[in-house]
Image (cartoon, rainbow, N blue to C red; front, side, top):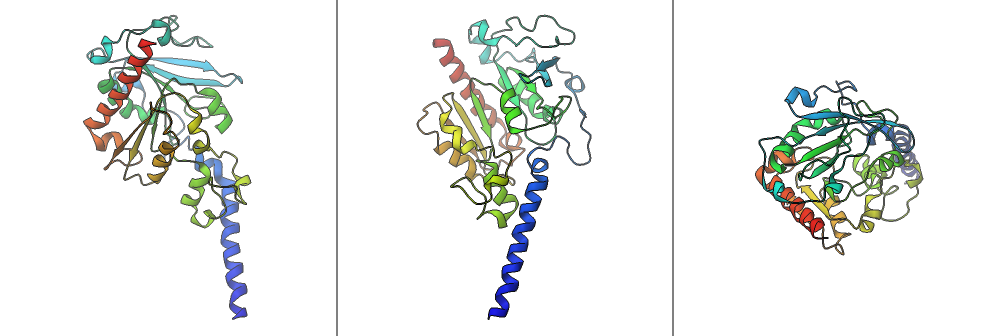
Length: 295
């Protein structure tokens, strides 16, 4: 019996060691994917390709990194219910850019009564890959959209990191879609042998190896702003249970909503859910905009 134990122990140890080595070596490439396989870092499609009304925006982050963004204006034929909301123009001012926005000198002026959504893309590809979704957002939500390219993505300078991306982002309301609880928990999803050794539930022996843990589960209950959780039940990348766990942590925040879409996949919940997806999002936005107006 003893002759069988050593090979098994060595085999298991070898598997765990290989998984740990892969995690240490390639974790940034697993978490941050600025270039999809078979594509280049540049934009394969731009708002101009879709005949959208937009501005190129260049920003400089607090630590000096030059960031690129697109400001997409509401489609003129989409009036919709949002236009009746009378918001304080100061809430809708675009930040002054450094250097100045190409082709415009007044984006720091109040816009219209249309809300502006600050859109943070998924971790793979660049903002150009999200334009199909964004165009549907413009059509269905009757809003402006500000698409910020993460540092290291698209035309933005720098390299992606947890600290850097957090520094670049601010929000007054939050919509989370098919989001993981933590990179620590996703390590066990991507590399199952690591599940017992890396995770967010309690300190585990190999947690220190993860340089960008993105422990959303540990901070989600500290967010005071309203949150809409959108979960696709057929998410093939992030277990849908992660979204439910995040929502459960925010139960004390009565301004949070959870919506599940039975046919939703990781990337195409908006497409598979159809009109209901946009109805849910519009209800959330109108509710929170009305609440802001009354304050």
